[in-house]
Structure formats: structure tokens, C-alpha cells
Image 1 (cartoon, rainbow, N blue to C red):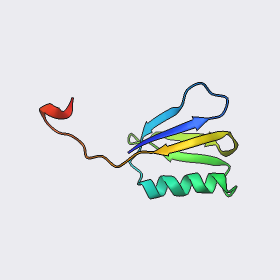
Image 2: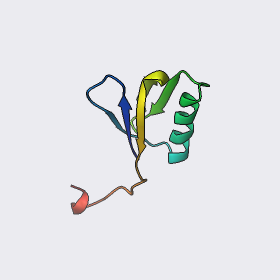
Image 3: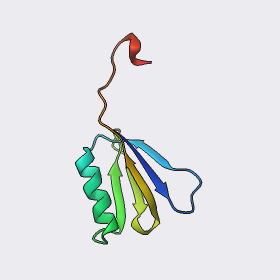
Length: 75
């Protein structure tokens, strides 16, 4: 699923494809915003970690789960 993260005072947003579920991403964002976590920690589909300081979050957009395309239409 695609996750877009807006960071305060940054010109570009962070975009990543995550293998985490929408509920997992939402709970990580909620924990960062309610103060129980100082960092928003997400993992992309290649295993790389993205860490954003909670006080710098502007917005988080969670996309829909999409099926992986296979074959000639996968372009």
C-alpha cells in the first residue's frame, strides 16, 4: 500500500510502498501523535525503515491495498 507523509518545513513529501496493513500504519501514526512514541516508524516493502520525528508530522495519507499486476498489463 502507498503511504504519503508530509513533513513540516520540508518541500517534498515522503512516499513509500509499505507491506504493513492500513491498521498497522494507522496505529503507528496514532501512537506518534498521542505522545506515546517520539518517532513514526514505518517499514517499506523492501525492509527499509522510515523514521520521522512525531513533532514534525504534517499529514499522513494511507492509500488502498492494491493487488499486484502480472503480465503485459503490469506496465
